[in-house]
Image 1 (cartoon, rainbow, N blue to C red):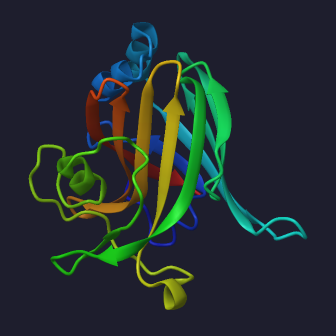
Image 2 (spheres, one colour):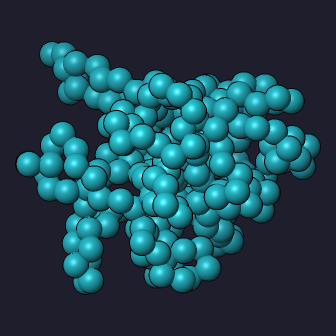
Length: 222
């Protein structure tokens, strides 16, 4: 199901399901991240449910106000996983049975006008040695196969008057033991005639092997 207009990158609250028809084939990417064959098989067969809670914490004497996004992922045949993100670009440790020990950071990013006059996400890559194709894919200029893409929708948001159009989430996760980095941009894309919550991702190993893909979710309910 397409995401309703009231669901935005500032309010992802609700129940989501992975859309396998629109999502890139996950097995090669998970293999690059050294996820075991049994887990990859179970993931490929299961319906993946994601419950998201997004909220703000106020400023204190020692901290700035911050946005939190909590995820609970469930699927038949797989143990549930939980992840809590704070969009302040601080590096935090996270561990689960699926990806192991990961150092993660995330932030909101804004838009910049490219050479074609289109607003694209503007962010600093953390993945080492990214090439031009990776950059174009992650910013929404091209599809995985290199064909031209409409890219992310540029939507109104609460701080647009001060910061300008466009708001997205940029995440980076590193697994030093398994030797990979996964970088993502989250936003909304028009796929067909419908608006979907989409994550563009690049996974790269320390050997320089990489894969790009798109993760797409159906909105189920608030």
